[in-house]
Length: 213
Image (cartoon, rainbow, N blue to C red; front, top):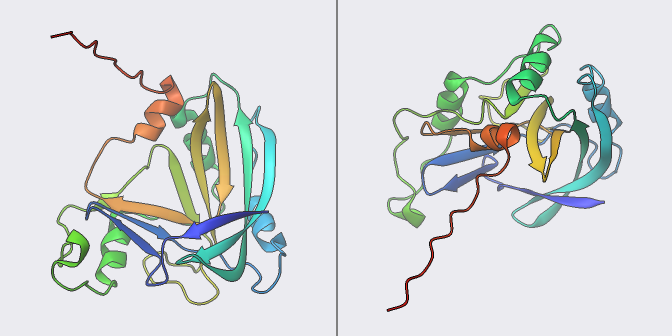
């Protein structure tokens, strides 16, 4: 069993350089037990991407500020056919989202950020006002959907928020799709480099030769 680091106990948020907010909405898994069957049932509502092969199915304990919470999540990873692009995979998943399930949007980010308490001025360089132009990030490499009646814009209660996040990644030449508890990121607009790497592989590191004096 692995562990998963929750971004923090206050709103479940990590602030990275004031540019990125990641919301991890720990889904309603059993507290005090390892039963993640409800989460697995949510995954089963979505069809498997054609040609995908299951690589792993693991359970982890969610931690808040490094402290075990007694809440457990489940992560399933599939290896995908190499000819699929990020647009192919997320397009297939979006076309098969069950009725009543919803995606976060830029408006979700705005409402969620407005609900956060502002830090004191000058705290760790985090701005004391909400940045302008905040949008939903990683929309080409990640798809989050909330179960009917769930609202990702509201802070989760003790039971978390029911939903699923599909994330594309790469392991060498292998293209992977993971299913996990709902999470989404908001920040200033920027390229989705994870989607670019999924499609084309890692960007080669340019080595600049040193010239002896």
